[in-house]
Figure 1: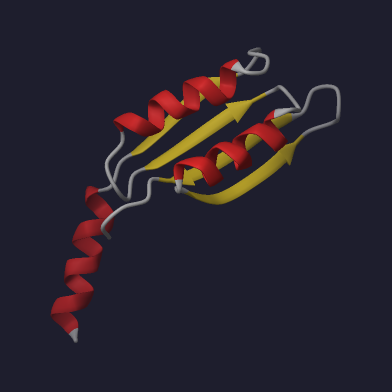
Figure 2 (figure 1 turned 120 degrees about the horizontal axis):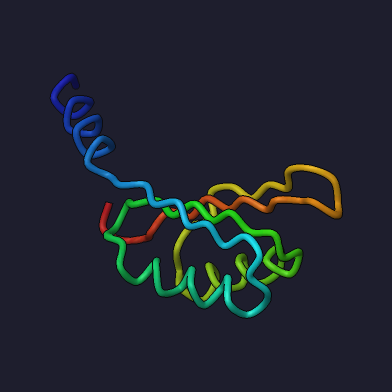
Length: 95
């Protein structure tokens, strides 16, 4: 049992996390830039999107559904006018 746990830990540490600052961009730019960034990632990597456009709450889940990747988290931070929308996406693939 222990060797499999060690292998999993090694795989997790090899995965990259990319943060994409999409603040100030309006639809459709956040989704287009997210799609381009996802295409460059390898399976298991994470993409974190920081957006200010409220439409991303619709666009990003739809994008993830189209690409087949996994939306692990979506959150709204702050007041409505100054809200920050944060999405954590895991690139799908042979894990």
